Image 1 (cartoon, rainbow, N blue to C red):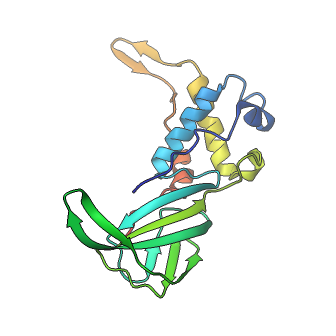
Image 2 (image 1 turned 120 degrees about the vertical axis):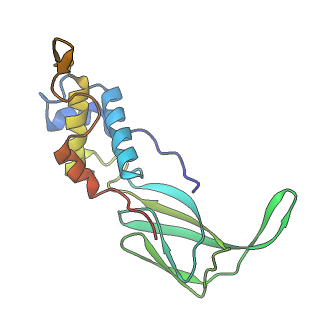
Image 3 (image 1 turned 60 degrees about the vertical axis):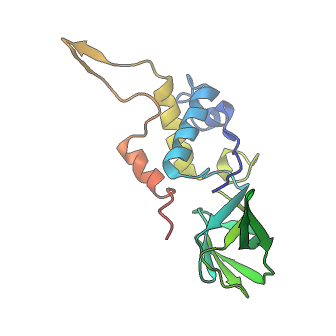
Length: 194
């Protein structure tokens, strides 16, 4: 899969301070960016905000494409390429005349007038994600914003570890989500595509 690089953050310290002035006291933009990077890594995609993306899928067959997203999407274009031959320089691709498509919830795209074969390559340009860039913190899912605030707050706290003998114990710090936060993130996590 070829992916377009995503900006690190659309959530700022000022936005989080509006939500929780005391909780965001020690948070820096670096803590927020680290929390967002961790969430995106766990979920397997950029999650928010809605951004353009480009992906090349191979080994597709039939008339249905499943895109790696959990949000609503706008499909801008689909190109289907059929392999004609190989040369020393690599694969030669030719654009296949196509029909129309229908984007459905859950990242499903139904092609009309095209039957894919496993040797075909499909390029899709689409927009997906939750919230609007520059729309403010209220445009993002509030459960995700809450997880970002909690993770960034923990990362900003000094370690509360106590060492007794050779054993160190303490509260969770850093960017790792806690169990209840993993349950929230699980609703945004991509599953294996068929």
